[in-house]
Length: 112
Length: 113
View (tube, rainbow over the protein chains, first blue to last red):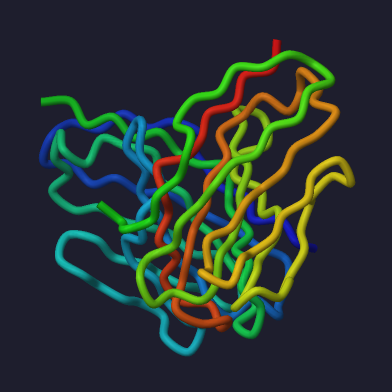
């Protein structure tokens, strides 16, 4: 019930391509869905987040798509750049609680 | 730079020992969270403190304990260490208790030999 399942584990995309990472959850009480980006040797940093009252949120080249009925959400990175190479984590939480449940991460490599 | 400071960055110790990891949250943040990151388990929530009080508990072992001091810094104590405790331990902070952006430190890498 508390898991967030993330796929794929790793992803290789050519520069300029679209990177797509998917996550699924079971707990319908989750009401906050962030994506974190982590570079080697650094802590995760918030990239973009969505709440279930909207189906899509876009910030620059990054878009979250949210499907409440399917209990799935995804991150799309448009025009992927080598600087986007990092590990991406989806997460979920119940709003009144402070702890995030993270997916296991996707290692993205963008080839020049 | 997230503004969250963790020390030490690296720590190597032996099984059975005890270590203390320290975290200074961002200025003004009252909540501190501890996470464990390992290759097989990913990022696992351990515990949250808000203004000195324990607020939420996750998959924290009984051998582990934490506290948040009046100056809001936090310490994570790991005792009777086992090989499987080798991991990256992250501290994060946020302004309040309701979830929003968590600001993570750069982590403390613990190696148990």
